[in-house]
Image 1 (cartoon, helix red, strand yellow):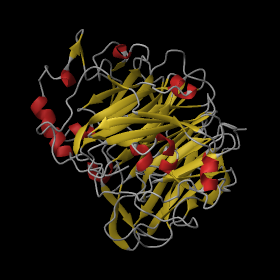
Image 2 (cartoon, one colour):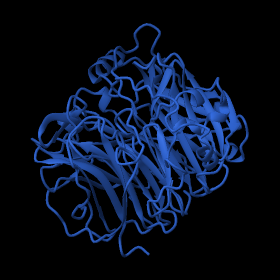
Image 3 (cartoon, helix red, strand yellow):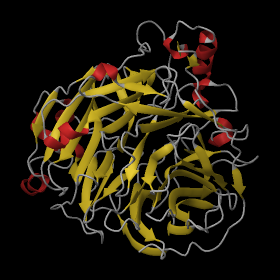
Length: 570
């Protein structure tokens, strides 16, 4: 992900107007790739063939400008953002009771997890790897036999013991995948990163995605590759979707039976905020390798940083269950209390115009089911959501991205109930900086949903941020995150809970990797996102990846991949 400063809002013609209907388009490029293993073996594309362009941008919107614009639009019912349908307002059809978080300020009991693989992955610790930018945008996905990790603009394939599977140097540039799209393709000719990797366990396929853009952001695209088999080193169906002058920043991917869902923060010419965009891609067509699967999108200038639900487990959601997207209205309000927003996406690829993105109960486009948050729920860094995380030996503070919920928004169907799980960085106590907040929301499609667990993990004064979490098949939870303080270098830690533990409690955290240094200079960006996945081989093993630093410095990040499971899950 890139960091972008909101320079102006709705000024002139650069910001995209909010529309109530879907935006529909086919891919501009399509082809099928060679086998990735063969590309690496023949050195068809060097691992660093395309120099990465890493502009100095800020992905955080200017909250003051958005709040001012919202105030100007208050009461303007002509605006699509305030539309009413059958007497139902955009803001919410239903609302759950205000939900106050539990503050866990003490350790509970030992994690009791069986720690598994823990190995160095892409970054400074990889022989031959050259760091071209920061943060690493660390993500991974897991199949029954393989792990794919992608950082910045390079990816690698590992076995479960951490042995690289691609020929030397063991990694490839991201745009290698899209080389077959040819010289007119942004996806083939540029290598920008902001990647997401997923494994569609229902189909046994890999999905890889990153964005692409020209150096002046005059042309922007999203690149999607869907494997033709369950082998990550095989061939892929390749797609490129063009967004014109709008940059699709911070793309996040959710797998669902009816579609692949990608959400973005759109920025015109790479600078001016143009709305939160939710897009659905025709999964069946992509799996079949058809040349023109539709992209159906909704764009709202009054929403920011959607996160789509991502299916875990072998049990799909009940038939017809729409994909839930989550966001909150922090960016558009001057102060708390804020509201969590649950919006349902129902694409219709046979008749795209009938697609809906609303509360799921007949509300207007962009309506949502609201989960009111108590006034104590504020973004990390005293509600700024920015850089305040302390480190040992330096005054340089690290970014938290507390202005949004963090990847992934996990969905699992347990049979008797279904649930969402998500994390965020918040400022839960006076004098704190960043605390790990996590929610379990059961029956997310119900009216209303149940906020089953809602807790801040604050066992000591260390900052905890950049989290990601998942359920195993029993309902145990595993969470990973970065931790730092003025007396500690940024480290990688995990925690979790068994389903039978008292509600709202995580067990004592475990150190995965101690930090060997702090990020110095003026570079505040850290991680941008991390990823926790559950292994489809047993639905018990958690796999986590994020960054750390081996010694004081700048642009010298490393990453780890680590696994663990609870012994009651077999």
